[in-house]
Amino acid sequence: MVLGEQWMSPSPSDQFCHDLGIDLPIIGGAMYPCSNPELVAAVSETGGIGIIQPLSLTYVHGHDFRKGIQYIRSLTSKPIGLNLLVEKSSARYYERLVEWTAIALEEDIRFFITALGNPRSAVDQIHAEGGIVYHNTTARRWAEKAIQAGVDGLICVNDRAGGHAGTESAQTLFDELAPLGKPLISAGGISAPEAVLDMLNTGYAGVQMGTRFVASQECSAHPDYKQAIVEASEEDIVLTDKLSGVPVSVIETPYIKKIGAKAGPLAKRLLKGARTKRYVRMFYTIRSFRTLKADKEKAGAYQHYLQAGKSVGKINQVQSVAEIMQAYRDALGR
Image (cartoon, rainbow, N blue to C red; front, side):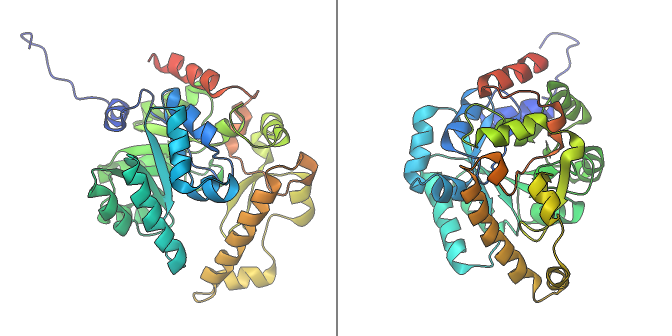
C-alpha cells in the first residue's frame, strides 16, 4: 500500500454486484404472468440479474421447471435468480416449493428472493448449498422477522411499486431498515436512470424493477399492455384489493373504473376476520392466477388487470432490454 493511502471499503452497490457476480446492481423483478424465460435471460445477459417466477415459468409459459431453467441457461451464461412465495397455507404448494428450491440449487442458482411468509426453512435449505437469500418487506417489523430467520438482505417494497405495493416511501424505508445492518434493495417507482442513481446515493445497494421490463421487446406481454404502460401517468395507477385480498397496483383502465377497485362489503368483512382472511385471500389469489393468465394474450379492451407501478410516468417507449440496460450502464459509468 502506498504510504498515506487509506483502504476504502466497497460501496453497498459494488458489494452487492460482487456477491452476485453481476455488473449492474439491478434486479429484474419476478412478475406473474410477465416473467417469460426470454425476459429473465435478457436482464441477466445485459448485466443485471433476472429472477424466475416459478408459476409464471410453469403454469403460464408451460415449461417443465427444470427444463425451463435449462432453457434460460441456453440463452445466458450469467447468474439468474429464483423467487419463492414462502406462505404455507397449502401443504401441496409447500411441497412444490421445496422441490423447486432443490432443483434450482441443482441447476446452480444461488440467489433467491423470498416473500409472503416466514423464510426460515427456505433459508436453511439454500444456505446449506452456499446460496444467498433476500426477502421482500414493506415494514420494519417484517424485516426484523426475516432477519431472525437468517436472510442475507432485504428487498424494500415501497409505496410506488407495481403489484403488491408497500405503504412507505423509499426514503422512509431506508431510514427504518438501514440500522438493521443488512444490504437493502429499493423496489418501486424506478425506471429512469436518474432514479437508479438517486436510490444508490441514498444508500441502497441496488434496485429492483418490474414495470420497466414489461415495456420491453423481450417481454411476452400483449403489445396493448406495453402501450398502456407507455401512455399511463402516475395518476393512472390505483390500488385494488380484488386481485389477492391485499392492495395491488394496477392501471386504472375502463374495466377498473367500471367494476371499482375495492372489494365489496362482504369480502371486506371476511378479509378482516382472523379465521376467514386466509381463505378469502386464497380464493382471490387462485382466481387472479387464472384471470391474469387468460388476459396474457388478450388485446387491451379485453384485459382485466394491468399491473404496473408509478414508474410508468418515466417510461416513454418500448425498448429492447439491451437498450434499457445501456442507459443505466451509462448513468452509472460501468
